[in-house]
Image 1 (tube, helix red, strand yellow):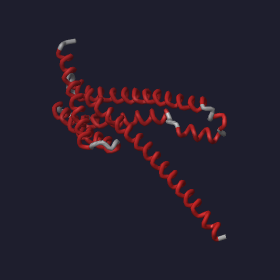
Image 2 (image 1 turned 60 degrees about the horizontal axis):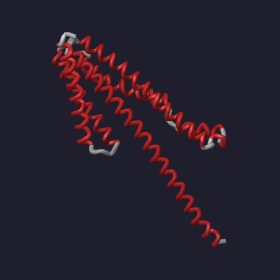
Image 3 (image 1 turned 180 degrees about the vertical axis):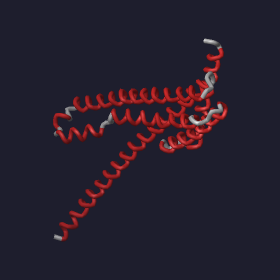
Length: 215
């Protein structure tokens, strides 16, 4: 009897080891999925931040009053959030359809019960969640330059404040995105910052040129 217990012990240890390994893999997969969602949210916020700030500065190059700049920022927020949501919804829904079609081609759905099929569907990306996350993250980023400029009447101070808060936010978003992607933080943050300055500068310069041309 003692010999049987001794023989059973290695099998028990192997099974336990496999369970631990499976749990570790599941935890790593869950962490990866959360990291991907967070990184996508940061990129969406960065898009909202930069596009709205560039739009406000560009319009401000021609119309310097605070009302016009704020209205242009609000229009950019709404249009950008809707565009991000629709684009993400279409993209993720296409991916969802492809993966469901793949399951049907493999004949897996025919052998599944209702609960098992629902469990498989839950593993697939959710288009509504993706659309909502993209819209919200874009809107959050777009609010930064809007709040920075909302209560400043002087044009030069207003533009300077927008550039300051946007630059700080770009460094933060760039650094956090690099951290999640395991890239060099300082180099990535500076790259995002310089790219943002170029975008704002190009928008200001081209809008100023078009506005001064009398078109």
